[in-house]
Amino acid sequence: METMIKPTTTQYAYYPGCSLHTTAREFDISTRVVMKELGIDLQELQDWSCCGGSIAASVGHDMGMAMAGRNVALAQKQNLDLLASCSGCYNKSARAMKALKDDDEKSKIMAIMSEMGIDVDDYNIRVRNVVDVLVNDIDIASRVVKPLTGLKVACYYGCLLTRPADITGWDSPRFPTSMDKLSRICGAEVVDFQSKTSCCGGPILVSQEERAFHLTKKILDEAKSLNADCIVLACPLCDTNLELRQADIGKKFGETYNIPIIYITELIGLAMGMKPSKLGMNKHIVSVKPVLDKIK
Amino acid sequence: MITKKKKFVFGMKKDRQLDGDKMNLDFAKRVEAEGGKGSAIAACMQCGTCSGGCTNIDVMDMSPRTLILMTQRGEWEKVLQSNTLWMCSSCYICTSRCPRGVRPSDVIEAVKAIAIEEGIKNDSTKFNQIFVDLVQKRGILFEPELMQRFGGLQAMIDQAPLGIQLALRGKISPFPEKIKNPQQFSQALDKARKKHGNND
Ligand code: SF4
Ligand code: SF4
Image (tube, rainbow over all chains, first blue to last red; front, side, top):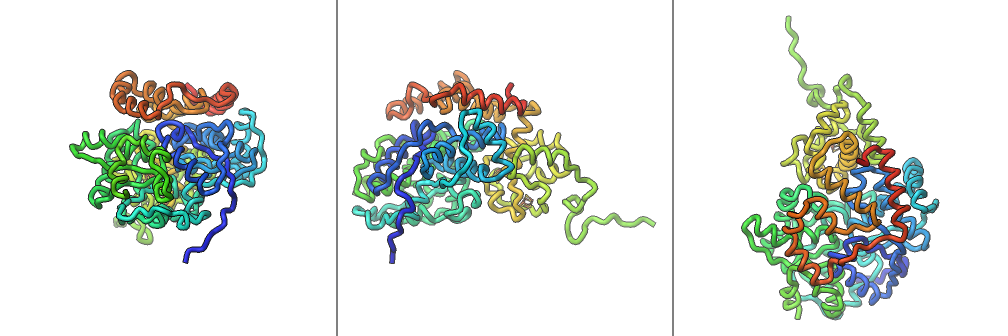
């Protein structure tokens, strides 16, 4: 029997990051409307900046930590837990939070941050991801009014949502199940997706394009061979590879892919009976019409 | 009488960590200083678990395990020249599997920064530096500018059809966003990079 878990908090400093304001607009829109409907108040993190992604720390570790740490400090100033939808923003913020709690690391990062005009010394907030909150804090089941019966989904977790465990820790780094659970609660059928934690090559997409395409192709191929109606995910960088570059990858390897890629928040919104347009689903590059037709 | 050279010690190959006299921790210390708490290089027991799970090992000239070994030995020319640094997609599989807490992904990340500092130049170092330059400029990344500065006009032409589709859906804003005080942000990061010596 499902028991109602009380949310630990109902207000968050919401950190959208660079992608959710641009290429991942539908992730931003669906996060906002779904969370609102679930009674969670998202206050956009004031004056947030780029977390530096997977790149900044490989140009300078302390600098990368300060970039991501800045947002953690801003959330602390607002005295709210930081909530990110983007797996990358979440991972880097959580990593910076861990570093800021380590005495040796902290002084180096704080030195850079104070040059930025930020002087927060004590951190008692938490850094969370939207999937973590949805699966662990909220009773989604009672909110499902339109079960997605007959929809076959492949849940793709990628790297940064659950790895490494000492930074994330709320789902398994090797065999995560949170999005599978959420999809099932929504009434969808979840396929046994071996590629669920394979890397799509996001951070090397531009500099090592061929390699990234090769990695993404394997993920698309498996979803296709399993006859999944769509891939469900929570990372805009994975979406760039799997959705925005899907046509290029198809062309390069002489394949045709038409696999809709949708964010977990869109899936939940649909099951909650929300209109696709209200969830931003008209913004996809690979058409989501087959998914919508199936659940009509 | 010729004594046969021992190849194995307790079933382990001799070129592994037991080979204490070949250790030179100067480079390892530098990597650890760069990578912070993440890189516990000396703890590596050369089990190869990291290599076994690595996403990109089939295109690497040096496995993650070997890269850690070479770092322990201070063979830093080999490490800095290796394509492993640039093929690694920071997927953390190695780090989440390593039984000794070495965090190979973080070691590689730290070595990347040292490679840039040492003047290694290739597409990846170029991309990484432009990426940071642009974040530093406004605090928020403007992707079209990243593509243009990295790939030039050709990249813009190649990406134009996708760009138009994105623009039609309101997914590229014509004006880049920025934080309230980009100057202060930028100066702080500039100073951090100068100290580091890689702001060329
Ligand atoms: S998994 Fe860890 S201990 Fe084993 S070889 Fe790799 S870094 Fe060394
Ligand atoms: S982080 Fe890099 S070295 Fe580690 S498994 Fe992934 S690709 Fe391989």
